[in-house]
Every structure is written in structure tokens, then in C-alpha cells.
Image (cartoon, rainbow, N blue to C red; front, side, top):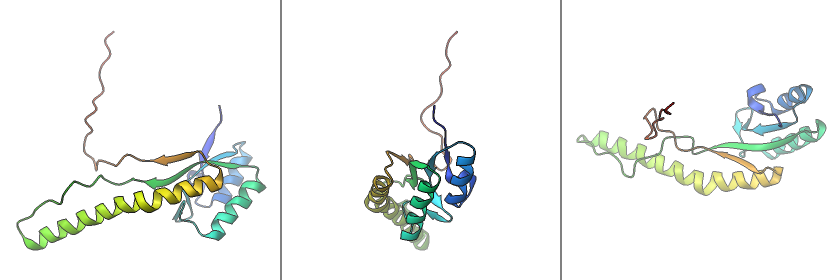
Length: 145
């Protein structure tokens, strides 16, 4: 069994996380972010610094977690309100959520795949849309003894 650690569970600085992790005997890491920036939306400096750190500590990134689809699934259409200002606000929120889905599909997902290839990573973490506290249709069943 191989053990890996999510870098930002140790430190927001991947270099510190990798240094500590390798001191503990762990050489495989999952990357979510670099300080306040989320992978793959990192600067050229951050990308190069990460590659240098991995080489320095004989470590590797085995998973990339860009936060794909980590938000509520928007409804098919905006809710209607009787007051015009509320109806407009609802529509604008709905439209923003539709744009977020589009940007994840059209921009973040391809950028994540490209960065995963750049790092030699075969694991890309994606989320199922959150339900905003709503219960899922799945209910655990009891096993008979």
C-alpha cells in the first residue's frame, strides 16, 4: 500500500508540505492548491517551483484536485417570483450558476487535464455537484442477519 497526502492538509505552501511529508517517509502527494491559488490556475513561477521542489525531494504529484463541479447543481430554469426585482435577482443568480457550469466544462476541465499531463498525473479528482444540504435519493438498507 502506498500512502499519499494532500499538500494543503499539511501546509498551504506545497514546498513546506513536500519537505515535511518526505521527512515522514511519504513521497506521493495530491495537489489542490498553492497558497490561495487552486491548481491548475497557477503561475509559471509556481509551476516551475513545484517541479523543482518535487525533484529536490524525490517526490511526485499523483492526484490533482482542481475543485471541478464543487458547487450546487443549478436548476434547469430560474425560479419565478412575483416581484420584478426578486425575479430579476433569481434569474441573475441562475444565470451565474449556468455560467459557472460552462466555465468548468469549457475552461477548468481542459486546463486540469493539460496540467495533469504536464505533471505526469493519472488521477483527476472531480466532485458530483453538491446538493446544498438536500438529502440524496439513496437510502442505506439494513442487512438481515
